[in-house]
Length: 180
Image (tube, rainbow, N blue to C red; front, side, top):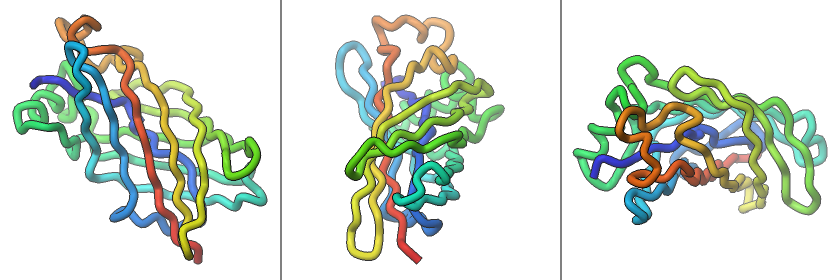
């Protein structure tokens, strides 16, 4: 299966609490459709610098970098295809990055993060809702974001046909942050 992608969003794993992101418990996963069939994948390596206090959400920030070579799809062939020029072009664009510009409280444990996602050399403004849930001494930040792969030139050439691979990729993120 030569499918794949995510923009980010991927890259995006978004906002978060304190500063100590537990990467072992955190994840960036995505689902896209190839010929109408859902295909799931993930990014296995990413780094996150975050600052978030729910009482001062507006002062929060997030800076997430994703190793695009860490893409994981159902087959080795799909992983190899995803790294090629028509898809993520990881030889030239090895990293994607999301940098927040604002975090707004929506009420309860719900928030909205906005910022810029840079993927395959293209930067776009994105916004995603998320929840912040206490888990003992940690906080789980969970959210999702539909991303247009074509807006980031993911799947160029014959792969730009949305009848083969749908344009919308659903990115889901979980960031587990330990309170200091």
